[in-house]
Length: 336
Image 1 (cartoon, rainbow, N blue to C red):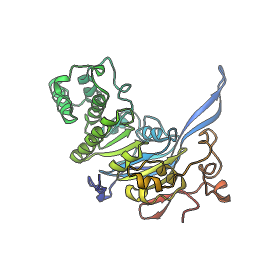
Image 2: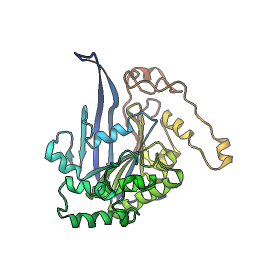
Image 3: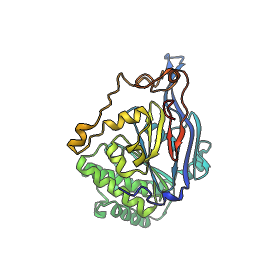
Image 4: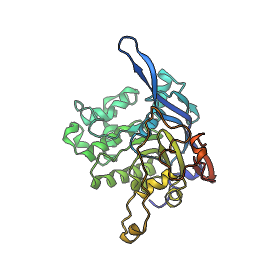
C-alpha cells in the first residue's frame, strides 16, 4: 500500500486515546498465605492515539507487551493504571451493561485461528454468537442471513455454514475469525498478530482482505505484529515497543526511512531487502545481551543495557516520549 492517508485518516479525528497505561501482573509467594512479592510490568506507562479510519501498527520483540496492550485497550485485562478513551468515553471506569454496550464497537482478531474457534460449534454458530450475546437480530432467520452475508464478505462459501472449524484450512479459519469480529459492525478492531500463524502464501490474502474491508466499512485497526515488512505494507503509522514501553511513533514511511531511536534502528536493520546489492551494502546492527526481565526492568531507560550509544543520563531517568518532528515521537536522550 502506497497511500498512507487512506480511509479518512487525514481527517485526524482521534477514535482511541491511551494515556499512561500500565498493566502489572502480581507475583505471589506462599501456598496457604500468599504474599505479594513483585510484579511483571507487562505494560509500563504507555501512551498513544489512533485516528479514525487508520491502521496503527504496534511492533516489537516477543514479550515486549504488544498483545497485553491490545487486550488492556479492549478491557479484556483491566488496567493497573492509566486511561483508555474510546470515542470520547473512558473505558476503564465502565462495568457491567455499560461496558458490554461499548464492546459492540470494539472487537478483536486473535493470533491463533486454531485455538480461537470453539471446535464444538459450527461456523454459523461461531459467527452468530456475538449477535446472540448482544441481542442483535432476535430472529433466527435474520441471524442466519447476517451470518451468510458475513461469510460471503470474507470470501467463504455460505454453504459451509454448518461445517466445523477442523474442516477448514488455517487461512479459512482466520477468515471465520474476521467474520465474527465484523458481526456487530465495530468501529475499532484490534488485530493481534492475525497472520503470524498462517503460511506465507496465505498471509498476503488475509492482509488484502483486511484492507478491502477497512476501505469498504470504514474500520480502524490496531495492528499488532512482528513482521515489519507486512507492517510497512498495511499501516499508516507505527509504534515501536520495547520492554513494556513505547520508544518511537511515526508515520510509516518516516519511521522506515528515518528511524531515530537506537532500538528502532536495530530492529529495522534486521529486515531483509530483496535487492542483493542494497542488502550487501547495508549495515546490520547487532544488539548485545538479552532483553531484561519485566519483573525487574533497568533503572532509567529500559534500553540502556543494550544500547550502543547510552550515556550517563540514560541510567538515571526514564526519557519522555517527545515530539521531535511533526507526528514523530521518540523516547531517547540522544535524539534532539
